[in-house]
Figure (cartoon, rainbow, N blue to C red):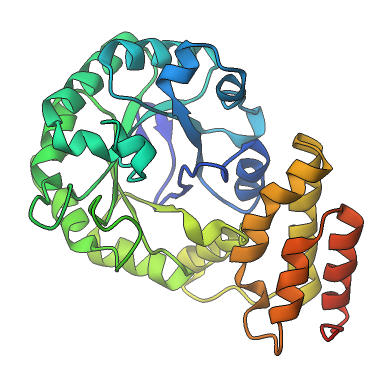
Length: 328
């Protein structure tokens, strides 16, 4: 699969853009475990043009994480074009247009998935952004606004005509948010449309290596994007890549190996922010990780992990888990 001249190989697996998750440290971690391409957090075009420091920091990319895409969102053509030019100066490999974020503070302002209700504006943004930069421009969207308006098959052709180099599709409507099951049938319909020649990347409910392989096999997509299943589990890319290459599950590592990965994430988060903010940031990963699933009487330990305020406290709890001392 290629995006412009970027060759991602056969059946690439990518880290989806996620706000407050896909910071530089997490992208590097997922890259280490085999992600073929990674995406930044959402970058507000308006905040970027206004030179908001927190937003400008999101443009920092590292050589080790390439190929990397910076994803921008907004609802104004001129602002999105200017933001794309600013992103290009940061030297990512790809600029991605967010036409799929369903949260109210984005979609409610006509950006992200909100543009599914204003397709002419979406197409203007795509067309003008492609013309304004020299990097490949891609887009990520959803099946449509709601069950009565699942418009992605037609929309894919329109976006392709605007010059986007690849299209990622989350298999839910905006109305679904993140509930229910992702519907990959329409993603497959887009991919198998004979008029579509750009790469089609599927996204939604990829929670295991087996599910990833099945989506490649059943729907013929060019690539697969993993989002929420990587939170607290960056090693999922290692598992997926092994299964795709060998057709069998990767043998599990010792429990302590996975704990050490979580510890590395804690330290990276603290180094990037500070101890207080870094621990608050990493709680999302500790809460989401499947590593602790099935541990008897884990509720009190879970509460303690999410209340720990220092690295020392947090590591002491994780070390107790490592030696099986989970009771209080």
